[in-house]
Amino acid sequence: MNHKQYEKWILDDSPLSAEESELLKNHLASCSVCQKLNEGWQKSLQGIHSADQHVPTAGFTARWQVKLQQEQRKRTIVRRRIIVFSSLFFLLLSLIAYILLSGSFASFLANLITLTTQIILFITKGLSELTMLINGVPSIVRWSLGIFMIGVANMFIILLTYIIWKARKNHREQQEAPAYAEE
Ligand SMILES: [Zn+2]
Image (cartoon, rainbow, N blue to C red; front, side):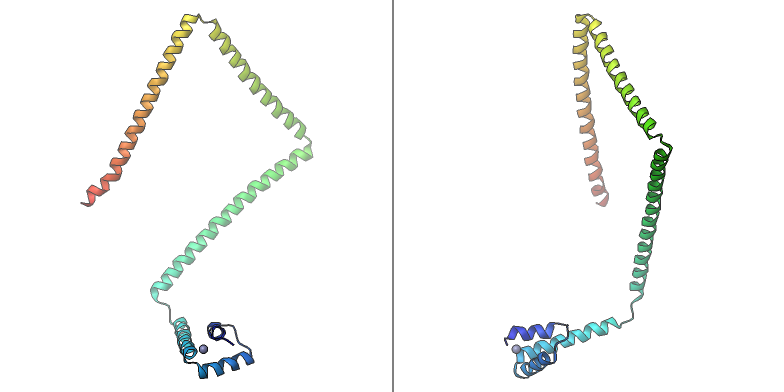
């Protein structure tokens, strides 16, 4: 049996068999290194156990109560969320059940499709009318309008750049302000 195995037995907190503890006892009687390790380990175990029996300090109790309250608050929030979500889920289920039972699901679907089609038709019509309107305008006006639009877009970009620059500058100044206050 090598040295390592005895060290493992000393430090392991699972109980040894009768044979194992006999072997360990014999080894400890002959090996001073393992003997020291065993004594040191037993002492620290005693230290841990006596520390366990200490009456907790007031600070500890207060901290523990705060932690307990936080835990309870968290649990309350979770419970509320569960109630809200399950209510919503129940409402959804009821709605589906109602649609299925009343047989109005088909009409519901039909209405939905009709509405979607109408929206698409409306957008298409609007776009084609806009194209017709633009085509009706004389080309010289169209060109002028186009150049004007490019100018507006450029101005917008310049304005945007200025706003971003200004915002960044303000942000930097705000970050530097506390440093001045501390001096
Ligand atoms: Zn040893």
